[in-house]
Image (cartoon, rainbow, N blue to C red):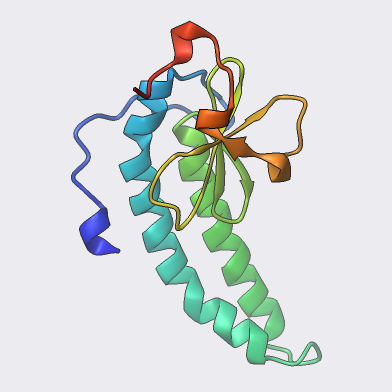
Length: 141
């Protein structure tokens, strides 16, 4: 994974959490390396806690501490994603608003290849090349 994370040359937007932004397709693509890096390191940090939670009985008194640690790490990741003006939809799932709907990216995908319209369920995402976006948004050739 480390070789996939390139240097970050350009940060499009950093603001307060919950201040969402509409990006162009090229700006959304520029976020990929940053999202990969943020999510990669967050997932590495969360993995031992997930493993402990899986091995812990629900009656174990340590479960409350582990759950709290899990929640803290996930909330930190969500905050970072939202500060970029993006939507954290699920664990390691990011939607980036491009004006007609969302570019959907889910870790560990190495490309932004999926899209769903505002009124569609994220689980119904489609490949970008299957979508008829307005000419202003076309970015792949």
